[in-house]
Length: 138
Image 1 (cartoon, rainbow, N blue to C red):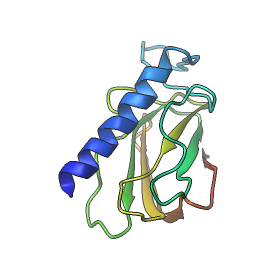
Image 2 (image 1 turned 120 degrees about the vertical axis):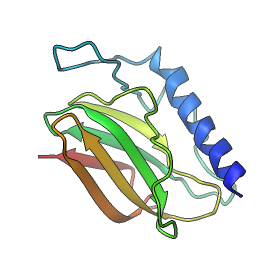
Image 3 (image 1 turned 90 degrees about the horizontal axis):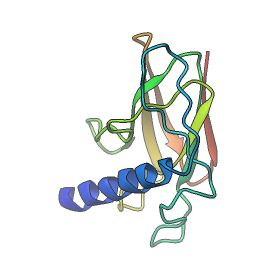
Image 4 (image 1 turned 30 degrees about the vertical axis):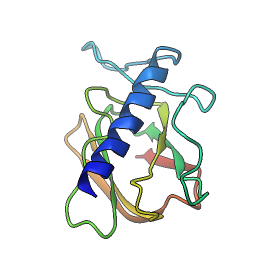
């Protein structure tokens, strides 16, 4: 089951990274960073899982800081899964569509985002089957 989750996460990361070339990347800091900004039209992750539930969520970063890492873990897990952004970052005022589907059929996930200002923001029990957008703001 862990191998299935790892494969599903790798597919999600690869889909997001493949569509980055077609998206506009915007970094707000003076240091050169890669930033991910994926539009709904260019995201290539599957729209629905095997159970027919849409788990695609557009993550918006409106914090004033660059998002360095993003985790989405099934609420039944006691630890955080892999960083979905991988080597990329999500610039301020940018967004990315993520398919938050770990293959278990779960809809409730815990989100954790880490930013360049050193803050980590955690939100528990996000129902990814019922929302299309999730906003990080100040």
